[in-house]
Image (cartoon, rainbow, N blue to C red; front, top):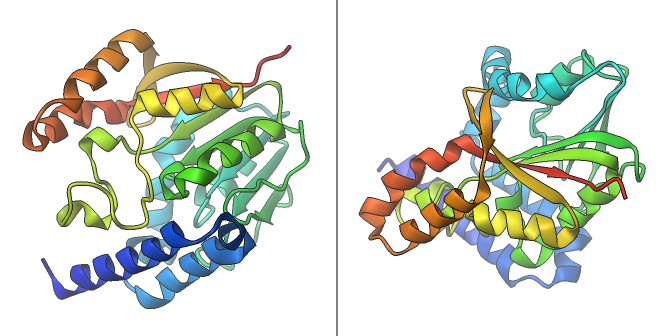
Amino acid sequence: MTEETRKHYEVEVELAGRLRRASKEERLGGLYASIYRERLERIPAHPLLVRSRDAQARDRASSAQLRLLAPLLTRDTVFLEVGPGDCALAMAVAAQVKQVYAADVTDALVADENRPPNFRLVNSNGVSVPVPAGSVDLAYSNQVLEHLHPEDAYDHLEAVYRTLVPGGRFICVTPNRLSGPWDVSRRYDEIATGLHLKEYTLSEEVDLLRKVGFKVSLFASLHGHRISALSESPVRLFESLLEVLPRRVRRPSASCLAAVKAMATKPIA
């Protein structure tokens, strides 16, 4: 491993430790924002920071996500992205919809270029989603849930739920614990110890979304193309079988689960 990678790992473990030990009041009082600002200051070669400065790299990273979302977008759609990072995807979506909200703890990754008039970046404390209640048709988060303290995950998903119109949908993409860890600690540890504070199986994610009140279904996609709906029972069975396998077998066997995603819908009544 390079010295740069080792430094990245050590910084993330330190910052993650602060979040894990902090009280809920501290976390919601600005700690998420300060931690993620400090990460970029102390890791100037962080891949997200490097990509944010490269327009072509931003477009490549957002293209598959845009293909995934496109069938669900219309000119009347109000779209929300939670944890948009450099906002490349949110700004691309803005060209196809009525309104875009992008909620994040920092705008440090957002390029200083012209923002679409129907695009609004809003400040989150890491858990809150400060957009009008009952206004969003489609919400999306990619690689966000795992960055939250486990005690904050339910409150965050409940905040997303409140933004949705009845019948509104939420696609929540998070790396699968069974093939992880997926943060920088993947190179060093058996479970996530960096800023992935908790990684989830699909079964755990679905259970959490249902606890909030969502109706949930699963579907498979590849390179942003939706392939088919999936039955939940076989996925749960597969994950339960993987849980008992040695890590060296479980990890590659679980890699196919990256193609499976959760679609959560706010009930109409």
